[in-house]
Length: 143
Image (tube, rainbow, N blue to C red):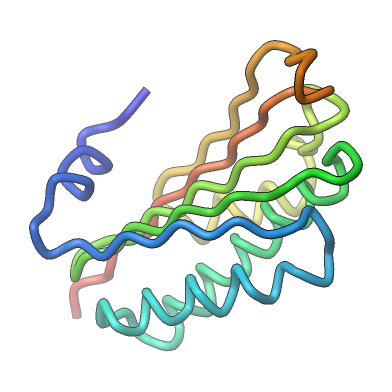
């Protein structure tokens, strides 16, 4: 389900959109962070806002990388304009719920983002696991 802020963001003529795919390996998550940070800074987010986004991305990507089926990929899409940034991280995982939504990490993600969802699809025999997605949006604070 796409909420209205995501639809507005996706339709914005001033939005920057980047999609990156990496091996589902903890050592590769730095690439996701670097790309997302760059997009956020170019869009005009503050250093503090970028730090919050980086923490949320680290948590989501780490959980998905740890739960990913062997030799699979993590995909991250970043869409930003001058008002908000949305990150979607996808992986094929061995279980349908690699995220502990009752845990501290999820609580932190919910506290530092404005909209947070996790979803999974049915078991995909071809890929050998469950497609899992974590999406979060952060809105710029008016100062």
